Image (tube, rainbow, N blue to C red; front, side, top):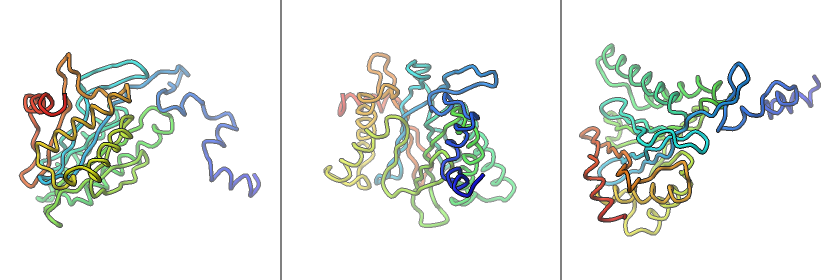
Length: 268
């Protein structure tokens, strides 16, 4: 192989595999996968998740819909998962892979706490999830295991503030100062959060809890209007997003009755 072709291969490895006939085109779509027998199948995906900082900590929310292509597989999926007493992992992507990552991360943090008699540092938690994503990249390349999570935790050892991160499928982590959203409905969600933070009555960081819940519901409802994979709020079946809040006191899961009342009074 010449130096020029080596440079081209380094710049675009999937293209090299494609030219050699070693890459199935169906596996390049995030919506499909290929089994060892060559049969094409459509894996389940879950979307959409969001998180932002407000006056009481960090609010993390996710709709309940899971899809496979254009089919709604499940309308009560849990995408906002508690990892330890002060950490939440919200998932977008293939739920089977994401839930397994969450279980491994939960056990890793629990093992560290019991053996070292202290909590793992925030940096340690963030990098542990990053490693799980890197280890999963082989499945990502096959189009059957894409996961793009959001991770929120509280930093007691550092600045005593809630911390918020989002990741790409390769495990790169990015700490955010205000808000994050991933999943197919995330463009609409980010638009709503950007607008409210820039031109709303208050900055996101100064919102009270009730106002923060209203904003999360409005963002997911807006995403559901533009993205069929996002469930938003199912008014007929009365299915509402899962919303959790991280603060110095720990994790609080908002009861469905409170979310329903807030949706009825300020969104519907």
